[in-house]
Image (cartoon, rainbow, N blue to C red; front, side, top):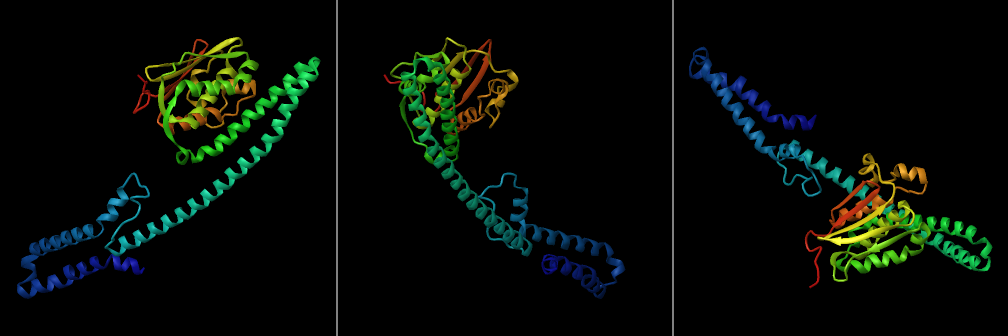
Length: 332
């Protein structure tokens, strides 16, 4: 009530002046009935002056209310004047303080989750490494059970890939803070990833074939770009046609990864980048987690590398464009 009265004090004053004082003054000077039009004119002028005064006193608040894109930089009103504008500014400040405190709580909770996931994954990696070592040892000791141990190894590899994806997903929330843009030999990073996936390629009977030249240098983050290429090559092996090749080439500032096999339905091309979306092939094979291509999209978007996924005529092609900015530089 107090704020309401303070905000309408000017209207109350105008009413008293216009409806009481002004008619009395006009009547004392001359008969009020002879100057009714003059009274109306003065009342309108006083109202216009009041509205103009109120507008300039609340100009910042009106502009703030009409603002469409608010962020941390323009959320508050600086140096408010009118009482209602001051009250509005105080409420905004309280809202900002509330959001900041919630943001701090969320960051702390996210940090705890990341630590828990990281610790859990590393704890699981140790026994998994022992299992993989036992598989290799028993394959040599018991050749007659080689195929059975190979099945165990395949399932073990799936667990290992899923753990790596989970760890990468957990760390991706701090992607911006972890970026280090530098010059990278594209061929070397593709070779490193291909070597890491060598056993997986052999197991899936799909083989990488790269035509990237030694002198191709790009500018990106080595670690996160490696995660992207690892995901794309593992997908190409997982869904590729048996005894086929994954072709990797670089042309006009663009990296192309192509594999043969049952393609992605056109209706799913955009959805495969959504978190936890596995698609038709993922549901049929039961191996997809719906995390991999989401991470690819998130990382490439953060690195500002445009990308495109196409799939037709039993061929799936993923293109990454390094031609922007300083990317795609070729050593002479």
